[in-house]
Length: 190
Image (cartoon, helix red, strand yellow):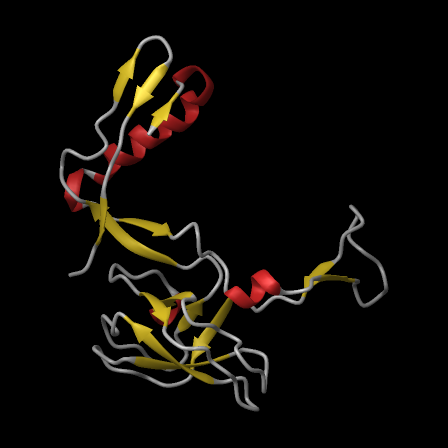
């Protein structure tokens, strides 16, 4: 990555600080796949602006956005480490292809971030039943067990990475205006 320190001084300095804070391969960082931040259904949704119950909008003239899936849903049943599927709820009822093949999601046991990577890919289109539940077949297999009621993040899911080596992220700053650096991350699988 090449940055102009004059223009991007805050960004490259912040990156240098973050890399130093990781302490080499010992530290962990949560990162999202920036190419798949939303379910495919949301990318195709027709959005509308909803008013408050009194018929008004926010001060800036906008309303509540409707037409998207909720950002988080929940697990319906417990599943063991190594399982190849999870049952989730909180989705629109009786709908076809709510979550689609290739959608990513993150499980947060107990609703909190985990040091264990819990980013999974949905392997098949998933219709919902009359309760808004569906079974998602996943890859990779569950990295640890989950409980009923665990949070499932479907908008901006993240996973846990660490630097690939202690040498990652070394900055080469060439005065007065160029900073070059690169780094490799690997998923922090135990």
